[in-house]
Length: 176
Image (cartoon, rainbow, N blue to C red; front, top):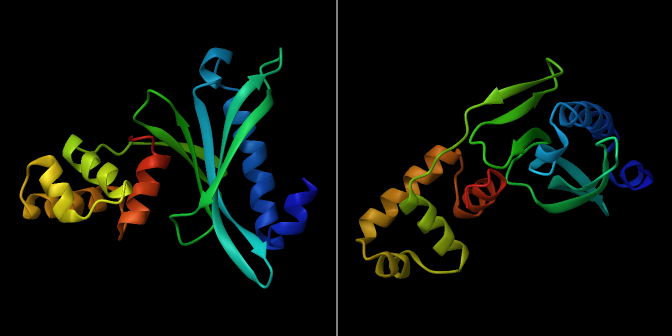
């Protein structure tokens, strides 16, 4: 934990302590088999010289102790698609719904998951591979206007403003 004390802004350290405690308690409500299907993601700043970078930190269990506690976990760190710290989500593979943590209410709330049409997902996948809108239209055998419509609908459903945020949010919500 010394890394976090040194590299996370002081005002966000309390948030990390709370979500760590609450997250592990919530994790314990699942049986051991299901625990391997769970992941928790949250967003916080890391100090980088004189600047702070907002990151997404996702924790997924790899090995459990005999008591069902996380012994080894995989942490994936990426740039955040959000603009502020927090945004704690708990996902279980195979479930469309997920849980969000409220720092005001200090509790987990079940939320309806995002669902995208296959064409909307295809536009995001092909965009992630570097294709232009015209190339995506050719690949999908659709008009450029159709591709723009799929993209706009995906952005609206994901609550984002650009393709980078859309791909990140779709990945975090395990839509791919």
